[in-house]
Length: 101
Image (cartoon, rainbow, N blue to C red; front, side):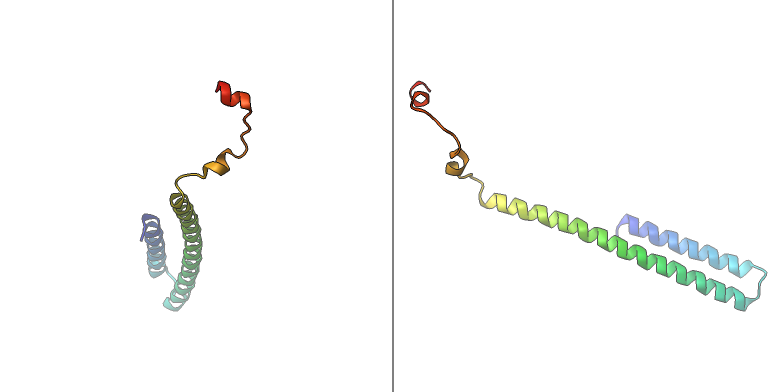
């Protein structure tokens, strides 16, 4: 797990613990506390799942970018010496250029 994920999990856990402590100390009956606590917990779980999907999408985009760069480097390393005929085909030289160089 990377640092960002750990921070998010820690923040979510602290948030849920704070809500649980608040409900436990609130002057409402236990049934209502439990119902409200479960509702809050479901919201936190939904937000965590959504955030997890977003992070997976971002990491897959990053991996595609990196793999594309790696593939380009591989292609360039396969042909490290350029084709001199292709590189010089557009150059025009006259007889004078060759004689007086």
